[in-house]
Length: 451
Image (cartoon, rainbow, N blue to C red; front, side):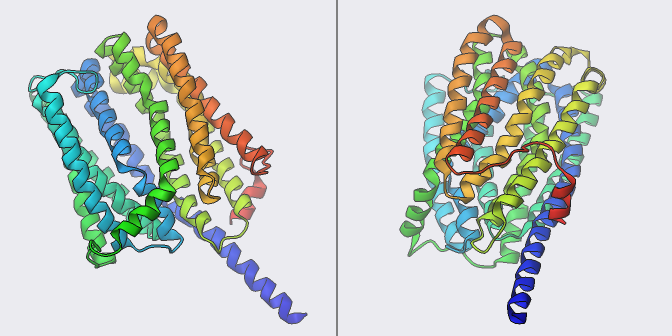
């Protein structure tokens, strides 16, 4: 009997320590986000003042292009990387070998597609008009190239639970953002700058991140990528797991970004700039939800973890409560904040921003809630939820945007974000028997459980 009690005590201490480790990792990751939030505000203010509404619209479209091509062409390999490394079914050097092959194939495909598009129709809905029309093509191609490897290496470190490097990368990005864009804005005050200089600064930040990840991989793992035997088996394993999640992420991206291209089609490029600004400002709150979801995923995927539902629900409520508080504060100070920091020319973004705060709350909650389907190998439900959300996006974008412009786009997004979250909750409750009565409010009991 005494032996049984000792074993039970050891198990209790182990699982308590595990919960504490997750809490510490998330805490330190969120702490590292503070410089990121500060740098995000500085970059947003300086780049917006340099670009103006029209330039903000053009740059917003190019940024969305980079994300779109990244999602379409990565086939979900980065997402599967974190899962299979954390569950000890593969190794970093094998993943990196697959990734290098995939990266080279993507560059050939994207370069060829851009070459044909540039010859046939250099100005289109994906690539807006610029003075030197080759420049946006080159910027999107080069940024996509570096972003692919950065994301893959990031996923390798997350799957290996080496979160210290994740935090360091965020701090480095924040510091380089602040330095580069402070210098850029100072030079702008001396002699007016424009789109090319802003693109150059963003690309330098991405390149610095790439250098950090290469050095970190060599330092931590020190193994050359495995690019000979076993590549096909790795590809088969990764794609077998990731394709559903890949489609889900792609649909989710369209759910978040399709309205931007619809706004561009039905209105003017300055209206795109106002809307991109409002969207980007609300999505800064993803700097809270993304780290929580990212750290929960490999920890809850660990086959040794216990209390999965309790840990998940506590962090879901913590995330929702933080986002709710920030959203209320942002709504109250939006008029003063936007005009003071960005200038009165962006006052047209205030109302869309306030409207989007409603839907963004549910979008942030969906990011964490979707983790449960991933770690229980039920990614198909995430796909269904995002498909439902995208259907709502298409319907209400076409109903609202032609007549109401960016205000209609904001309300259409709210409907889609809420619909996606509601679908996730209902499916998890009735299909997976995940009964969480309190979804949003962090409690004293949650705090005691996670300590």
